[in-house]
Length: 92
Image (cartoon, rainbow, N blue to C red; front, side, top):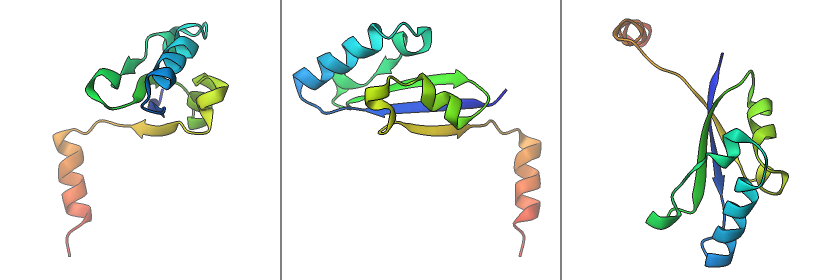
């Protein structure tokens, strides 16, 4: 199943942080309630990694108030064989 990183930004002021955390924790979603946060390091975002079928399904996990600002990134891993194939594909 595909894996996605969901990044959800919010404003950096105290009220915005508290609101975002409250919305996530009270969402009822296991994924959202267990998000990782960067606020204490000055990076006002939440991150969630999920295994779902599509970007649309990943976006649907995000609370509606933050959905339009969420960035969804499809994740993948590479092996050394993948790397060798990529090098071969890019030869002049």
